[in-house]
Length: 297
Length: 280
Image (tube, rainbow over all chains, first blue to last red; front, side, top):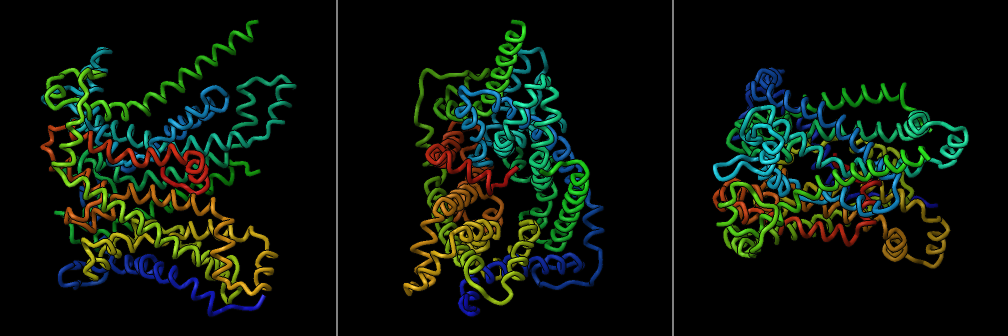
């Protein structure tokens, strides 16, 4: 084939232009911002170069709160949603009747607007002067005392938060796990049945090892996704997440950039880089761990 | 005999478990439709919310469109979605074609560079993009909303893999016939790879319809709000916080288009997401 240097670059030009302006340049720029101390957005000037922005962010109580919330969301939702999704996928792959219907229903949260459905969750969990709300009604039916999940105590807010996050991320995990389970070679199961292996043993010795790369993929993407939690929080608690005490790291970045507390791109840049460092480290640990534990076929 | 009994027992258990999760998934949808057809007065008089209504009304839908410019938000989202998706296809198809079919110096190096960009999270580059759009005076414009999201390295990669699967002979034959590269791309490659192209379009449409963060940063004039921002606006200032039924009517209106899209293209969407979706 003859070389088409000029033509090829012409075909690539739009992509390179857009990536250059909106990805490569910003990547360099964000590092520059993060070390410019006391950057003023209006005059675009700064007083010095150093790690002052990182120091400020790390000692900001709002950031510490956001860090704590984000880690809690990650630690709670990733294992729970992956575990539930695995159970549901196992259930799905063991039935035939209604399987398609279940799969369609389970996928619905994926195609809904997070903000819109978040409002429904807020209504369900909220306690107002007019009504205790659906969920509190259920709680009192079972003999418990109701609580305002949206503006009440921290643990209650965290509960709704995690519940909603799991509700949102389940479709993707169920979808991926069911197709992984379907691709396990049926001959293994037949052989195991002939040998008289119990179903628990079949699961531990055949199913789990065969789908372990998929489970791991879901855990890694789950971690990355959960660390970037933001719009789900806004949907439930409104845009002023600091006041609600439910801010996340990404939320902190946006608050620093924009809104009533905004205008500090340097602090935003420092916080974003801290987030990136955390996500990178955790992904790296996950990958190293998976090398020892996961069987890639 | 005992075997059989325990097998059917576990079957019942499995169905029970699956039905419970299906109910948890469906309930919010049911609740939003139900609340949206309850009249304002009857909703507020129910201290203990009722699971059905005997007098459904569509008044809330009328007031949802009257109280806030919901139609406007819809139109904006439609323009944003169509323009972003269309422009993106114009950018990624030629790029994927160049990587898949054209020989040029540095192809592998450039492709590796593209792939490494896949690891960069949006959160990291959004800060500068915001400043860029502000400096270009593009706040509250469609261009400002659209421009940063018209490329996707991942979709270029997906398309390139697909293009490469088309046998070389077809390309050589077209060359012999004197077909230009562009004509070959449009007349042969895109039709053959149509399933992938459709998948990418659908995934992008879902992403656009749900996008919230970037539009929120870029628009403060409600004439340019997308549905997500509109919903947030309604939540914070619209209707008075108490008019829940009207709020739910708006939520239903916003959710319906994507759900219909999903039910129509169910197989395509699920296959597409398992190949290239992220979320969660």
